[in-house]
Structures are given as C-alpha cells and as structure tokens.
Image (cartoon, rainbow, N blue to C red; front, top):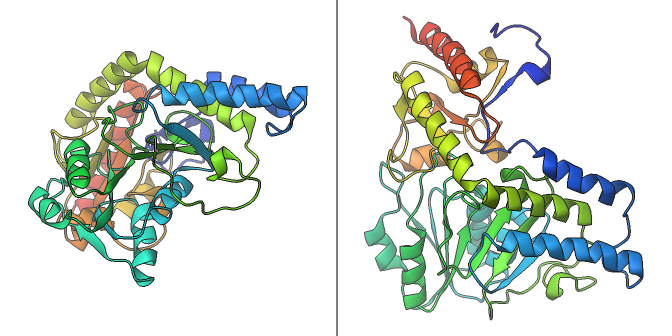
Length: 373
C-alpha cells in the first residue's frame, strides 16, 4: 500500500471503530422505507402516524433487550444528550466521576461545578482503572450522583461499574453508566440506575441515542416542548433512525458470540503485529477491540498524516484537532511526549485480518522511519 497515493476512499482501511462503526446493511435497509415512503409523524394520531409510532416501539423494545430488566428507554439525539439529561436533570447534590471520562461527562460536571455544585474527580492508576480507595472515600452521604464509563473510549479499559454502583447506592446516590462503547459488547450491570448509549457505535445510524432509566428515576427535562418521550425529551422522533438503531441492537444480540470471537482473534493478531509498541492501559481489564499503543520517538499526528490510506485515531474523535495531549493518557501518568506518541486502533465486525496486517505493515514502517536517528 502506498501511504502517499490519492486512493479512492473505498480502498481505505478503517481502524477507528471507537469513533464510529460502519452502518450495518440490515440497518440501512430498515431505514429506507421510513425515509422514503412511511414518512408520517410518529406522534400524529392518524393511521399513518400510528404505523410510524409502532416502528419506534419495536425498536425501543429491541434496544431494551440488551439493557437491565425493567425501566424505560428514552430516545435522544445521541449519547451526549442522554448524558446531559441524566447529569443535569439529577437531583441537587455532590457529583463523583472519573478523570478518564468522556468530555460529555467531564465538561458537563465542570459546568455544574462553576454553577456551585460540588464535584469530585477520581484518579486512575497507570492501568487506567479507577482508584477504589479514593472512590470509597469520595462516595459518601451527600453525593447525589456517581458517573462512570463502562468501557473507556480511548484506551478500552473496563471499569468496575458494578462495584461503583454498589458504593453509590450505599450512599443513597444514583449511578449513571456511560455504556456507549460497551453496549452489546460488555454486560451492563443490573445495578445501574441510568445508562447512556448511542446507535452509531453499534453499526447503527448517527443522530440517535438513548437514555435508560430505572423505574422511579426521573431526571428533570432539559428540553421543553411537546412532552414526547414521557415528558423528558420533547421533540419529534425520527422513526427511521429509531428503526436503524433497533435493527443494529438486534444484530449485536444475535451475532454476539460471532462478533466477540472475531474481535478476540483480531486483537491477538494485532498484539503480534504491533509487538514493538507498548499498550496503554490494562492488558486484562479491557475490551479487546480497542488497542491504544505508543512508541518512543514518534509523533502520532505525523504518523496519521503519513498513513493516508489508514483510518486510525489519536484518541477521542470529539477532541481531535484540539492540539492538547489526551486527558485520558495524561491521567494514566504518561508524559506529553508519550501521549503524543500514542495511537488508537479499533476494529470490529467488518474488519478482516488481511486489512489489519496491511495496516500494521505500513504503520510499523512509517513509525520506524520516524523514530530513526
């Protein structure tokens, strides 16, 4: 592969599954009739509206099958909105979260801190796992909400969500799980009170996500209007996006074993192919489809620019272009140079071993040339 060629975008190797996943053909097919022909407003009372609403409810039920039992599912524009509803709408009181959370969490709690709320940010160890001693000290009576990501989007580390939820409940606090990267891949503990998810991370469409709420949990709404979604999220739903989300969720459930085995095989292959790189984060407590790797003497941004036919990442897509080292990697104790020498490769259902081998060959060659004295 020529890194410098103007290749057709279809020839690119896609290794950025944490930023977004390829849309499943089955999800696309489910969406087309609802965009083209069955266009009625799902909140209208006439027969066409009721038919569209029925499609929404089928999707809602399918998505819920991968979530804790009971509760209710609210459709949102994405996980960022779901997280904001859960955090901003929670009852007043202290908030506890983790230093490696997504910006949707950290920026939201920072805004609340500036408004007068008490916020505690828990540190993590060099493996990316939360300091449980610090968590036990911080999660105390007076805390209203604990927020933790199930699978970290940058380094793939799986946090002890069930234990954190137990600490939250002992302090009479609610527990919000950001399950965007874990939904359909890593079991979501039944002890969660709120769960945020996103369609485009599971081969569904962009522009739709959901917030699951345990029975009895009702955050205050952020958006006021028509009172849709139980009064917690006003606005007209897109039946097409909901249906695509539902089909993607069904495929995650039906293909769970095959997808898991495929990703594990790719992960083992990748660890061999990138043997000269150092893994960032825990080698054991992790989702195998996310490898954050660093190599001395390289600059990840230059590597990304050189390898134009490979789509990989330097960290969160939401923070790309900021010029700042990853807050997640800095929380692990990495220096700025080590953080800038790190890249994230993510793979999944549609990645082939041949693609991974070809990408590794190019990336390793480019990294070696860059690191050479």
